[in-house]
Length: 224
Image (tube, rainbow, N blue to C red; front, side):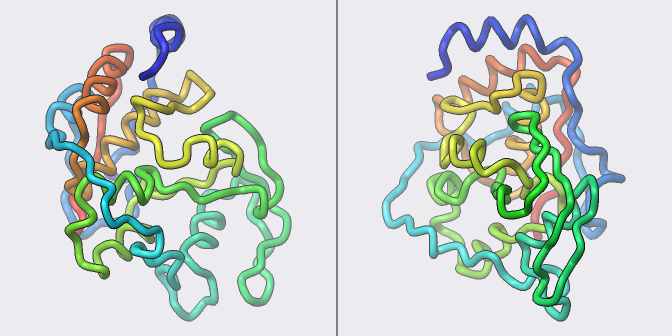
């Protein structure tokens, strides 16, 4: 459970919460987007116990050929190219040279693609626990390579991603407190997009955290 000191820090710092991306910012135009306050979105999450039985990371095929199978760039590379602040050179075989990225979890500039991880906003293990165990292999692959909205996959420092591991917001939040509202918005949006559940501890944490994010909305598009 998040420590009481963490709650105090959030209440003191989160005075200008970051809103979720607007529908105009979403990459996918094929489905309607819904925008609701964060607290409302949290209440919309189905509550269910998590079940890890049978999970294997290989149950989610990643990284696949991405949106353009002919360009030689897999999903990971496409995210890095899309999120680069200073674009890298794209060499043969989609090897990336140079470039610069902003890791929003820990407020760090990263100047090497090799020092970045592409994080699944809701980790694969958490997705499995929350309903993906019942999906087809094809739907799990679609989830693991979701390029249709910009918040499903995020390029961040390897250190911050590995600190997060498969934890939900009741157990881990970005070390940069100022981005907590943004992170919660993107977490809840991903769960709503894919129809994933949340366990009781997770929902309790999200409800309490949402109180410090009164101006934050969640924008999500149901996955096909």
